[in-house]
Length: 286
Image (tube, rainbow, N blue to C red; front, side, top):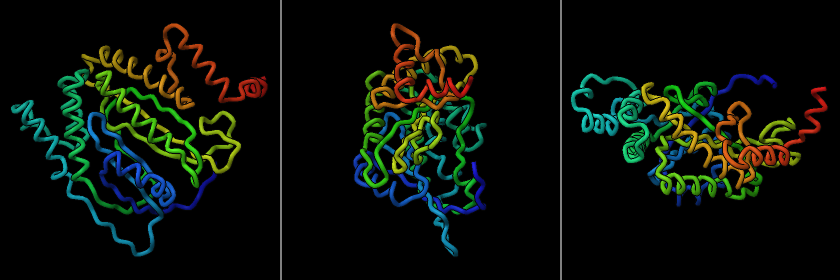
């Protein structure tokens, strides 16, 4: 790792749909230093968050105050829990958690919460300028199950669009299998790594990689076991899709519980052996 001087970023957030996202995807990757997509299951909404080094004297066009942006979540809470809504205060992550607690493994309920969150993000369009550490951070919400993959998606000059293919197939699978998949499914991009054991390792300096994370919030505690089982099934399907797109997982999030069943652990080993120089790794350990 190498330190660099502190710098400021100018971030833009807006909402789009999949068709327009595809039309502008290459331009986004080639124009912005940092790009993040947040896909919202059971909707056609994708939140785009992109940033570049802030120009001297630049002025951001701020979003609406959060108290106004959370109205769709508050309205849904008033509909589903009129008595509890009056005492509920907090930011959008706290309101989302309150809503999900009502029925966290019911796909129809989760879909309604996601739709309200999509409207929250629609009202959140705007810009901000700040220290890179603040801009690149993200409010994830409460405790959660996470599985994150990484796969090659061409070069910056010639992206292959498999990154978008992967997400569209994932979204279709969620709806087909009625998975209570909460929002957001976060997607980012990085350049290649020269570390042989990195999921983004490549000998080609122009390669780019997409990272995708799926989650489920562990709330309420009384339903933690049911949520764990739902996420295990979700993660297994996500793992199958990861291998289809020649991906591997963030090392810190590899969980063998997601690879139970006939042949599944063998599939994981085969993919790791194919993607990494495991013989070289073992030699370094000796």
